[in-house]
Structure formats: C-alpha cells, structure tokens
Image (tube, rainbow, N blue to C red; front, side, top):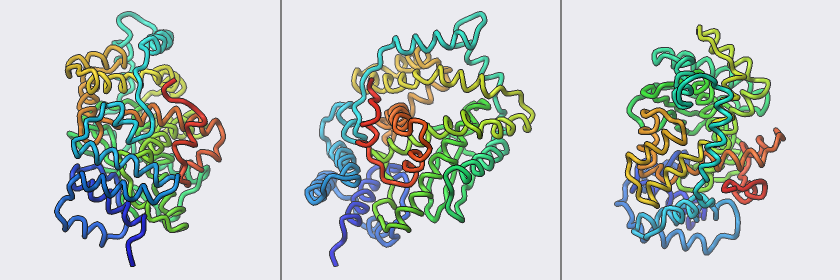
Length: 389
C-alpha cells in the first residue's frame, strides 16, 4: 500500500530535520518512519522542494496545505533560494513582518512612566523594579513547580485535561531561550527552564503558564488526545518550527497568562510567590506587563534590522535596550536568539500570534478551547485581527 499524504508529510518534515537540528519541534508518530529517515542519507533540499510541490499538487485548501507551504519555503531556503527575510517569514508562518513605528514604543514608555515613577531613566527604573521582585536562581525550581501545579488545577477545571498527562521539570543553562516545552508524546512534556537568565516573580508565573497550563503542554496533549487518538489525524504527530502551527501555538501560549493571571486564577498563583517568602503585587505587575506589551514588536524590528537592513549586532542590541527597554544581558540573549538557524524567523510568532489569538478568542473561553483542541487555521485568526496594524 502506498504511503498516505499524512505519512509523506511526516517523512518530509523528518527529512528537513536531518539538515537543521531542532527544526522538528516534536515528533511522536510511527517510530519506524523516524528510524527509516534516520537510517537514510540526508535528502538534498532541492529534492525536498520537489516532494513538497508534489504533495501540494494533491491537496485541497486546508490546514495541512498551510503547513506544507511553510515547509516548502524552508526547504527552498535551505536549497539556496535568495528569499528576502520578510518573504521567508511570510512563506513559513503566513504573516508578513513589517517595521513597527517607534512612536508605538514611545507611547508605551509614557504609560510605563506613570506606573514606575521616580528619578533616573525609565529603563533603569524598570530594571530596578524587576530586580526587586527577582527570584533567586536556587529558588526557581521549587517555585515554578508549585506554580505549575496550581496552573494545572485551574486548567483542568476550565478547559479539561486528558487523564495521565504529565510534565517533567528540568533546570538548564547556556541556551538561546528562557524556557522550552519539549513534547514527548503519550501526553508527556519535558519543561526546561534556563536559570542563566534572571527571572522576576512575574517572569516565573508567565513562563510556567506559557510552557505548561494552559499553554504549550496543554495544547499538545489535548491535540494528541482529541486529534490523533480521537480522529486519527497522523499529521498532528509532528510539530514543525517553520510552519503556521508554530504561530498559532505561540499565540495560545502567550495568551494563556492573560486568561489565568488576569482572571480568577491569578490570586492562587500570586499566593505561590507569597508562600515562597517574596513580596509581590500581582495587579501592579500585570499593569506593567500590559504597558510594556507593545514593546515586544521591537524584537521583530530588531530582526528586520539584522536580516534585512544588515545592521550590526551591536546596533541591534542597542536598539533592543532603547526601545524594548531590555537589560544588556537580555538584549544580548535576544540577539543570539535572532541569529539561531531554528529561530531567526521565529520571533514573529510571539507578538503576531498573541494579537491574532487574542482577537480570535475575544473574551469567549470556548474559542480558547477550540485553539487547544482543533486545527484552527491562520486564516481563521486573520479574519479576527491584523498583526501588522
């Protein structure tokens, strides 16, 4: 029997993964297929483009076709096609990155001035405030574990969780990200937290929720339960970085803290910080976070400066410090992220995914449940909002 379209899609994704480590974010499909690809020599990227074209010719408009366009774009870039940065991002994720007017950041800075009064530059006041609620590195693991358990209970009540799901927490160092949810299949995830980076109490709460409940882990285990086991959708057993599913996934994960921390779950999570012995005003911290939110687009501007306008690394770091109000350490960390092969185009998924998913959900919890359990397409989200404003 010839392989199905879904099996060919999995093979294409796994073959792309032979070229760039980490481009396959998760795989829990047929192990024999993964073993076969691993046992073969890497396939020339031009041949992968041809394979994607053949699959696209057989598919009607739909979720799987959206993902294939992303993979074809990535394969063509590997094959040497001279895309502009904006073209590559749009081809992979379905949204075109545009440069945000710095007046947007200046307006956000003015709102922050009201929330963080005092002497000295705004960035210094922001960093001092963050330092005042910082969690020591040796306290992060226990505090984030307690946060995850509270978030899990809230998520189970609000959105449901399949029986047997679980997460394993691990502290790591020297990574280009703050935290990472590695989905292992069988309803399990490995949550890695980079303790090299300073983490405020708010950062800790947001990170825990983003990576676990009701963020990345919740999405992946719900979709395995509903779509793979429930409906037999084999294509859901692979998660590819350069595809629209990543933008939707980051939209879910960045929206998750808004739902929990700004809703009825906030007090229970704030209590975790208090119980750990730290003073923390959740309402004020969330107000600061909301005021700072537009500055997330500064990271996309930085990517455009780096990859389209050929700005130097030092200039990009300075830009992030000025407009993103980042510490030098964080600006250097983000600049590293923007240069990694697996993440150089990925930064669009955070602000655009958040805006699109927020507009789609629009205070309707059932829509967030749909994001967790259905193959919601980027087109569905675009009808509810435009991330490029």
